[in-house]
Length: 296
Image (cartoon, rainbow, N blue to C red; front, side, top):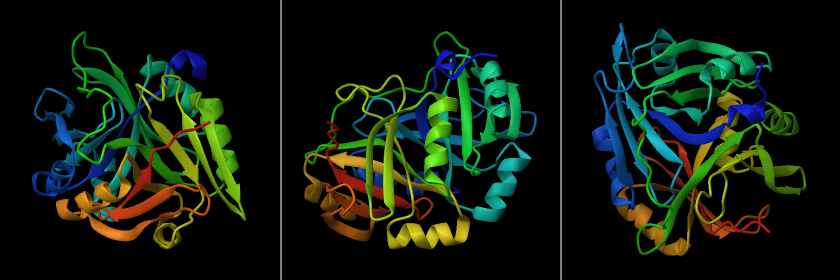
């Protein structure tokens, strides 16, 4: 069996389920985002059951993106999730160098199968739950030229906005940090702990602060919004994370674009960074907007 290091896991996108993507993507587009790809029909992800509508959006960063997926969903497990949750953050996707080997590797290390390994026209993939139940999609590109397009790593708009990753709320933070380290070969970049609160900033092997500044944050529920959602759902994907050179301008731009305020910019008592929270339009989920992250 291949090891985590041999499987080359790299963070790719956060998926939002939404039945009105063409309407709900507009606040993102007005907030300095761009469309990296549209996919539908037989091009991307199709089975005998049908296909979905996919839109990928990027903002200022080279690698990490949003995928907005809309019905009709082609798998029963997707339709069941949609029936229970409706619009919302559904999964995090990781690229690998060998999806078949990754399938065996993750199942042998505590993941739970949702969608078995399958070969599609342009990639191989499958879906599992991590040990706390959050969905993980694994993709291996198999076509010589097909890729989800990436932007250059350059801040967007006058505010210098960049999408840099996501936050996940954990039941057992330390256990999940170890799991992602051991099973998906992530390394800890920065750790914050104070008065029972903790946030661990993790990165994959391709991380570079100048050219690929993608981060994966595991933490406990800290804000009132996080605590309320955690009380209803347990461990879950909580925020898309953005950084901005001019945080207050990025906040004003977000409100103008159609995002909703959750918490205005203020100093985070845990990280010491100026941080704000917004509600995004697709699933009513949260966005974390922070000052530039510069790990020592």
